[in-house]
Image (cartoon, rainbow, N blue to C red):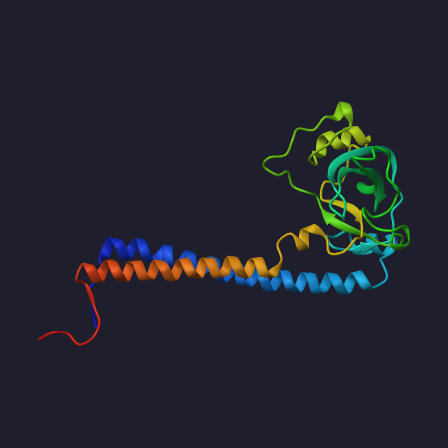
Length: 231
């Protein structure tokens, strides 16, 4: 084999190749991490929900399945969908959890109905509600989200400052919301392990393609040959 690497191209290629491989490894690790999270959550969801006292003792954390809080105060209407995919307004009120006000989903108002929803997990039957809610991370604003309209009580993203004012809760906890349990939550199911595996394959594929291009470029320049050197 004969190989004389081009110095400048090789100096550029090494960090690019390292970055592509590192991204592939990172996504493969995230696939395992997400699978472990989902497995842990499924085990947690089948266990009795934590009492509010136990939650406060352990500290409020993402993914906890807890007993129903008691929300009160103004109802804030956040646009979204129920578990069945029906568009409408998710209704939130404030509940005191461990000394801090937290937004708790207390109903759902379907657009085609227009009336207030019942206090139960969106899209689920009354007998399925009752004993468990889940602590979810505070939702992030997406790129194309519409503007909020506090005057009409129509919210499209979780603006902590404005929601605090509307709910009359100046120290509203902006880390978590609490929603009725209706299966694996969106923050776990949105990007399943299989998707991370797909990302990993993509990054590794790009690394392999880059290596082939690098080799072909050197071969055409006469700087890479396989087999015995000519005498």
